[in-house]
Image 1 (tube, helix red, strand yellow):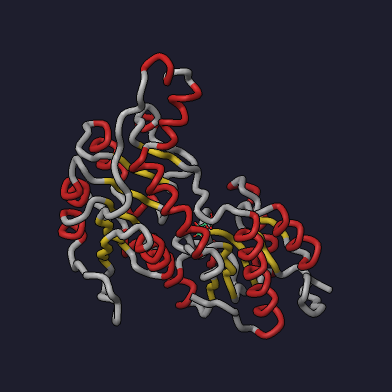
Image 2: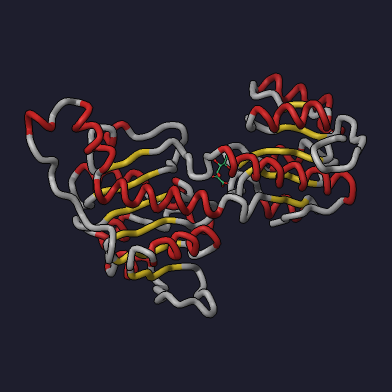
Length: 323
Ligand code: 8YV
């Protein structure tokens, strides 16, 4: 068997691994698909592509790296980019489609896990639970007394930027907390029970918490601008589990440092894995190392769907979950 549950196939050396992937997926690609890995060193990479670029028909990558237009050009026989992850903003989909290259991602299998992370992060941020934990560990409770009071999550108003699969799953969870939900998308969602705001600034001005769940890429870059942050205001919270690029990170950091925002919970950043150090000292900010989908079960399901896309493309020419 080439991979569990999938029929044997003989694909030779046509699979290219672009960027780091989960160790189990790296092994599977190497063992079952004879994949080669694109060197990260620029000189080695150029030489490798000059020698082998024409051999590859599929690139397997993830949201952290992706396949840009210049790499596509160096892979003249590429037919598919198989992306581990639901977000594919690092792959140039327009350039891919213009060249007849299919792109797949891993939707649905990570929706629940990522929505769980968003709600956990929202609670952690509004209730300052990580700071309260640090307070206990530092021995401050017996010395300094009660931890400062925080803010209710239940019954708060929450604006969701990007009411797609994950945004909707976040809203469903927050309904159990009796939160009022409103949203902003590029287009109104049909048959949606939540109020729609065409303007992110107006949405931010009317909620306690803004949750960013929009896809990354050029269409959403800087959508949460300094004006949106200002509209959220000194009693507002920002939660981002989407992509750092959706938020004007410099404006966010200044607003947090100057206390023009009540707090922020951030799982994603503009230049991962680098996080602005000004945030490290702020107890009203919760910082996570991009763990939205980071559970054993969810990553296994993402890996399985990645391999199904790869296998399907190699055996039938079609992707299972094309974008
Ligand atoms: C992964 C993600 O961490 O699916 C996504 O878009 O951001 C995460 O689930 C990422 O794809 C791994 O590189």
